[in-house]
Image 1 (cartoon, rainbow, N blue to C red):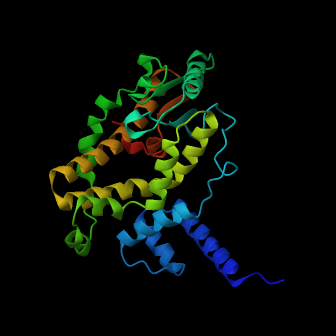
Image 2: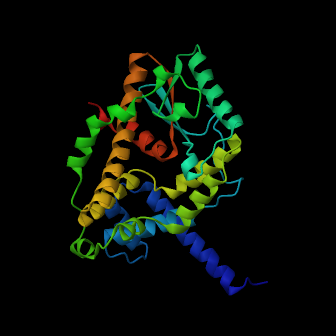
Length: 302
């Protein structure tokens, strides 16, 4: 029995997006992505269109039911990414910053679970330890000495990232900048934004909730290095507007990138200085993929 035409169309669209997702995951730049997408039948005339399509395809090609959410890997008690350099295992665990003002609440049982896991890493006798992003100790019971002090340390990388920003925006984009909300929407796929916000505001009660939120977050943000290049475009777009609000937004994005780069450097140095074989880092979800990427890029070393 033949399938309905709309079902076949949906499957064809799904297959095409899945193929686009593979290209996004393996591309090192938006120019490279533009070339391979256009060779696959897309017609994307400029980098801004490539970014918007990539965010759409990256989100729409995924499923977010419990069965699709990333499972806790066998190497740890928390979800995360593993990077191995010089026989040292680095584990970057994205967890949630509690923010009552934004409506993001982490239940006491999940706080206790994460705090206990961190203590397990710290007490291990197998040359294992943990470090964490500054500020997480306001929600979780973490040793002050294990903080990465990124609120202070990131400044080393701030000026470097700011000076390295390329001037990639085309003339039409520069002329069409209108206001802050427009600039934000240019780089925000709204269904993804709303899904992430809604799920965060439901609160996190158990580890499965964190796994689910992390799966959403991993597909709300493009994978590095595209996510990093996307931020450089976004910064330039904001700076075209050149007012107090957009300057604040631009500085915030540079600060986030700088902190990710600094935390990768800190992990590398901490593991070497303490002769560790395993180092776990507890960080905000938005930093996880960037830190894992920067750990493999040796230009971050001072």
